[in-house]
Image (cartoon, rainbow, N blue to C red; front, top):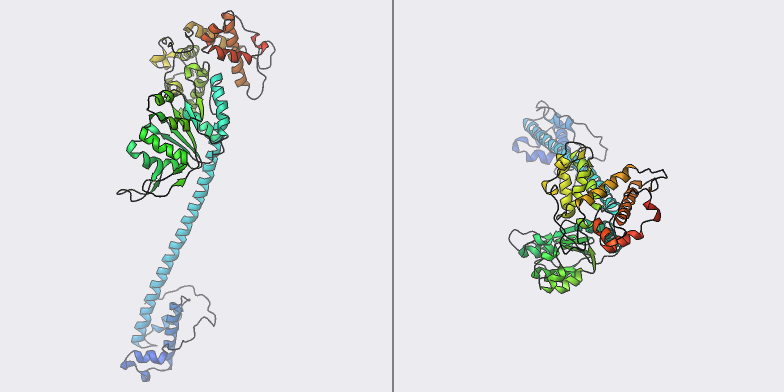
Length: 497
């Protein structure tokens, strides 16, 4: 048998265990080997070898370092009997097998330790990145959430900030694509619940048969192959639940949701216990829920429960020069996304954007700017880069609009001429032209200055008639009055009428 070598650990005199009462001694082992090897056939040398074999077995049994030298000596047929040599050789093979298994187990433990350390490093890295992303998103939504400067939007944002301080149910009304979910996220990231979950639910997309399991959760074993899972309401516990298109919910689902909102408890399908939930519920719809309540298609008690505070997001066509601000904002975002330089808007494109009614609101404008960014051949957008629907004259305003007639294309072009004229003559440090003070935020103050100048020119062109001026600007008469209260007396300087 090949000699097995292994680093030998030092053994103290106490390492060798003393014989225990009842343990067989060398002579007993010799007698157990059979009549052919009785006590008379064993000499002093063989008895010593048997003692070494017993000590070796005892070391192996108690996981102490074994003496391979003593084991190898027992395999020499010239020193010991053939049967003892075979026995020693069998023990040697057993020792090799045990050592191989021990090495294998040590390798497995080392591998598991390395994997556990790697998983721990990955967990810490993901946790750090998650915190960074949360802080980045929260900072983005708190500082620059909504693009626009019109009075109607400013009032909505101001009220939304007030709502964010308290977890009161909020209803956001507005046409499709006007930015209702963006406003809901703005409220969430400015609230104390921003470290929780923001769970958005499209109420019109959940079938009535699955409403309870999706919203409330389900227990294991309720149906074949169904596992236990949390519902969307339970997931939003400690955060904000955003119910989009809540007006499309069926009456039976409204009853179930109303009970949760009243009791602030949710019970999973198949469970007997209800769990308390802490929610800030924000709802949104493009429907007129007051009319839906009158038509008995929406529960009046649920309407009052959801509509504690009401926010109305204006349509894009009512936001005036915000259309150009949003267009530039989306051009910048899509240019970064598509990996190209930022684009500018030609005067023809600005006129087309201002005259189009935008039935799809902000969402339609964002899609149009993404398309134009991808198709534009030069650094400036032209009419050829826009969709065909923006190249045709817009239809007249509906009779339901507070503004009886929209400004004609020529008037829109005059506003754009004024915008370009004032922008080219702007001098942040000069005294001849009206200008906002230099420093951080100068660009935003310049845009507000130009907007105020457009208001003054419209009044001058209409001989001070506020109704006509408001109609040209796309504002209501009350909106124009509020704008005039914010315009300083010196802003009319430098306007060429």
